[in-house]
Image (cartoon, rainbow, N blue to C red; front, side):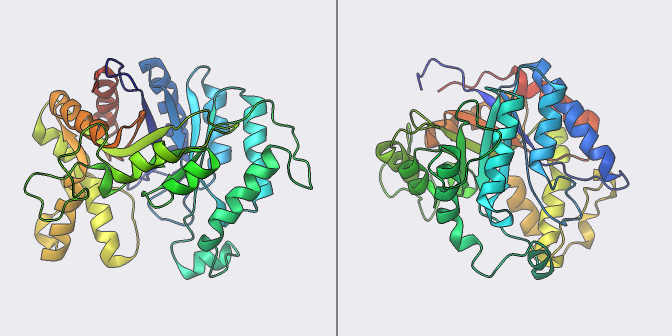
Length: 347
C-alpha cells in the first residue's frame, strides 16, 4: 500500500440487539444502514453469524448479505463471517456461488472457525467436539469445491472467483498465506504496544510499517491464488466517534458493558441505553472489564480517532480497515458513521 493512499474503510454490522427493540427491526436497520453507508462512500458492508445469542439478531450471513446487496448497487458486501464449523463446506460454497452470481464482483466471503457459544447451541448445530479443529480441512475442501477440484460440481457455477478471507486473531494467518486467501485480523494484537507496556508483542524495535510479526509473515509467505492475487489484510477494530471525548465514551459504553457482564453471566444481552447503566452495581472485576473493553475501542473526536487508526494501520500494515461497534443510540451511531466517512486515514 502506498503511503500516499487513503486507507479504505468498510463496516461490519453485527446486528447487535437493543433493549426493547424487536430483532426483526434490528435486521431491517442493518439493511437501511447499508444504504446510508453506500451513500457515505464506504468501501464495503459486512454482516456476521451468531447463533442463539440474546444480544445479536444476525444468525444467517448469507441471507442478510443477499438483502444488503439487493438494497445497494455499488458497495461491496461481505460475510464476517460464515462459520465453517456450522455448515458443510459444500453448502457454504453454494451460498458464496449464489451471492456471486446474483451480485457479480461485489461479494467478499469471510470464513470463521467459531463454534456455538454453549453446549446446547453446539448440539442444535450438530457440532462435534472437534468441529473447530477441522477448520483447516474444511477450508481446503471449500476451495476445492469453488475451483472445480471436487467430485461434486457446485451450482450455480461461480461466475468469477469470489475473494475469500480467513477470520483470525492472528493464529491462522499462515493458513491464509498458504492457501492464497485474504485475512481479517482482530483482537488485542492489532493495537500497537504502548511504550510502557511490560510485555511487548514484538521484542524488536518500535513497530513501524508493519510491526506485527504475524502480519509480516503473512505477506512474506503469501502464495497467489484465484481468490487473491496478492496478500490482502483487513484489520477489524471497534470505533465510536463523536464531537467530544465524553460523547464518544457514552456511545461506546453500552457494548463494553454488555461484553463485560457476559463474562460473568455467560450471556451477551441486548444493549441498554447509557442512561440505564449504573456503574455502582458493578463488581470491581466487572468495572475493570468494562474499562478494558473501552480501552480496545477506538473512541474519541474525529482527530483522535484518525490518529489512533493511523497507528493501527502502521503497526499491522492493513490494506483496509473493517470497523465495527454496536451502539444503543441510533442517532449517535449515524453521526459516528458520518464522521468516520469523513476521516482521511493515511500512513
